[in-house]
Image (cartoon, rainbow, N blue to C red; front, side, top):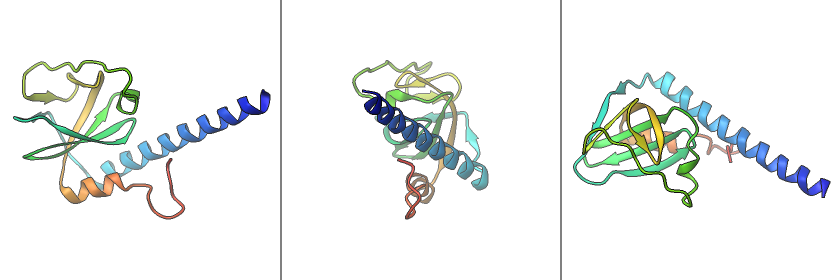
Length: 132
């Protein structure tokens, strides 16, 4: 029993460490790339989202791509069993600091290009440098 509990704690600690390292890598990328945040994202059709880690996602619409940073870790992004409704103050606009995605409050939104989106999604994929 003790061995099983120790193994579970070790796996949990590794996942937490991997998530923190992934989050730090994205934060470093934002700082080094000097990405500027935007106040809002306007959209006409449904947004697509790509999971980066528990703190960041990439939103895509026809007009561009955006890196979204949440105020805290957003476990809702991984766990599809509990769906929390989004809060929107205006239809077809997502505001940083006010609106939510999957129940998680948005801290900042950064406009990014295709190359930056690809780099962000592959952070930590170098040989011997895995976050998960």
